[in-house]
Length: 437
Figure: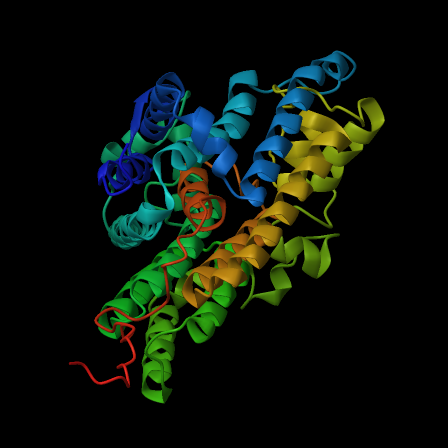
């Protein structure tokens, strides 16, 4: 495939769009069909044999660690029988899907996208993410006044009907997430979209402010602590470190949009207990409140309870791909339940590989790419304290698309962070001092 071909960008565009597609059948999302279908075609083409060895060290380390996790998922079935009388197993298909889908995205990107098409593809994916986030925010806002559950049911996986859907339960408590079932997943997506907006629209301030305002409203309507405490702060930092048109007026306008969004959705913030300190959960205190019971509480769904089961029954390899039928309210908990301490260590090492990839990216001299990469890694790590940030439905495809383009595909040395419309002066040969005859 030619480096100048637009086909890689179109394939990544398809994968990005598919992440926001509906369920095609019970338990089968559009993104799964697109991601695994693209990966299958890539593997059949054998182009991956020559492309994968050309990937960056961060890519090779991350893929190797994912293979370690996959091995732990297979071996962990040994420990599953020891806990079956205490807690029922989960879904083995979901367990493998959570790990294999990111790996399929990485392999597809590395095979299809070369250095010459890396930047163009990255911009394409960022554009799709920003548009999808704004559309989902508008849909969430519509949900506050209109019953759209009949249409949105296409985006939910509910075996027991609408009344049993987690999405419906969230709406009943005043949390509007659009196409996402879990507020935490919506919060992570809006966090990624905010970073993509700052990166893609940094030279178009009016569009950037409009996009950030819409994304902020969406994040606040979902009442996601992931967005409020992780994504929004990281996006603010990125706004000031990202090269582009900045200034006092620009900053004031962005701050005004943020305050306007907060004011527009203020009534929903009391769901967090921020304005109602008397609603602290009993026995949990501040930590239990701001982590939604994940830490500091004594309920059966807390992270501590899940870790206790792992340490007690199968600490080394966990319980295999099926895991346990408990909420994975933490990335390390999911890795430990399915792969034991081996899986949790590998999960942590993946983040180390990503950080190392960011350090390598500094040598390319592209400050914009570096800022986006660091921001995405920070969001992935911060989100993992509240949900499996690297395997969340829909978000995982988008996250690994961006990370692969930024950190795994080798950068073209001709790339620069020169603003659009501005060009480096071409080298002019020195005039010879010897007179011509």
